[in-house]
Amino acid sequence: MAMVKGTEIIVKALKEEKVETLFAYPGGQAVDIFDALYGEEEIDIILPRHEQALVHAADGYARSTGKTGVCLVTSGPGATNLVTGIATANYDSVPLVCITGEVPLSLMGNYAFQEVDIV
Image (cartoon, rainbow, N blue to C red; front, side, top):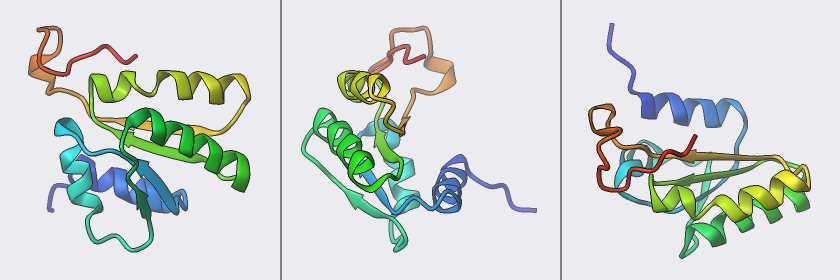
């Protein structure tokens, strides 16, 4: 049996949850997810110029459509740039899902490039 990649599981989950629009900003630790999304016609990918813009866009999308806003960014500064938008959505009970890349497990806790404890 062929091994299923985590990135394929993410794309499958997005499709099973009927995510039609994904607000995303490419970066090093999320590139594999973007590769898995390449060619997916069921999901529109909106690429704002900054992570803060995309999280606020996802928030506005959720407020205007009643659907969950979904974000995808890289680790470290990509993840930390979502904080204000996450707080805004949280305080107003707006449904928002944010997916971030992460440094490899072997580098965690070593102050690796773009490592931030997002939990």
